[in-house]
Length: 453
Image 1 (spheres, helix red, strand yellow):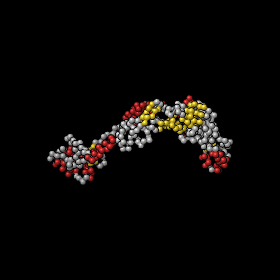
Image 2 (spheres, rainbow, N blue to C red; image 1 turned 90 degrees about the horizontal axis):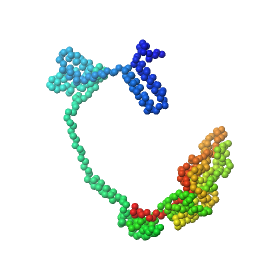
Image 3 (spheres, rainbow, N blue to C red; image 1 turned 45 degrees about the vertical axis):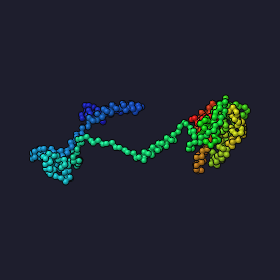
Image 4 (cartoon, helix red, strand yellow; image 1 turned 180 degrees about the vertical axis):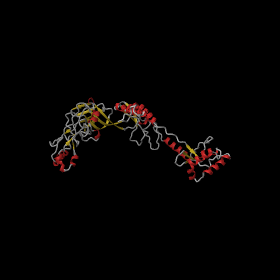
């Protein structure tokens, strides 16, 4: 192949050689910066691309600008020439050559236009109203473009427009005022009503209650009122619910009796109690039938169906008989739970009578705080999708099995947990770490004065 870069070659082009050299430079930059980020590579290429653009422009000659001709301007120039002179005749011929077809297409004649325009200009006017405003490029074979006959430019300042004045409807203004007054009347304040008004009925009677040597005047909630008396500190009965996490030091264990101490409020009703079961607690149910083995393969469909029935009959083990698995186990509340005078709660560990608890052993008391790193036994899952395989291909596949655990990451099946999404070890380890019990109870929040807040 000819080496065009050789400057001594006959017919060699210095301009082409510049382009070839610049292309080589750009290829080298790209090849040497394959691992460079886009922003840095763009900066490196910027100078080379600009040089390439300049060199390309040097090879392409500048396109000449073709002047545009205007019929009105050409006729005005023609009239300024002496009639019948060579220059007049030459200019007339040029107009006829450039605009002859366009004038005929408009139903006019060039001679008549020149005569009419001459009369108008000699009378001190112009030809704009007589001669169409045709425009085209010199020498173009395309039809001329017709513009407006006389384009004018504004010579005086624009008229100032007065601002509009909006007059409100009197009825609308009256309704706006009424709505505003109504909204103001509904304004909520911290000042309680002192007399019956609308839906509010104020209680007048109060009685004094002594709590921890503090005497407080309260309103009896039995009265037919929904606003406490201004002289009181609130209603007698107002219940709140509290859930507390307790450490092992907050528990007093005696045999199968547990007392929960250091509660923040004195309970009036205990609704739930959970304790961290010791490692020796029998709350994990593993498969009892030897046919149920993790990872087992089956020889035929009947064998698989038989094992599936056995697995379901045992309630799909392995599973925990506690709603929180090995993390926390529920205790029965009710007649076995007593609220003491000092605000502590004592409960007896009874035989599990929840239908979900299969063992009949006593619930064992906790032996310490939750360690925060418990991993429950993986659950099994039966691969039901394999049942869809045709009988003819079953013998060839032969890989049905009980698998595979865990259902949730690092978690087992916790029987009776209403919040299945939270039944995994990661969440429960964070929630119960360093605590031995959880208690939920109702208490009377009587003396937070609603009437003052």
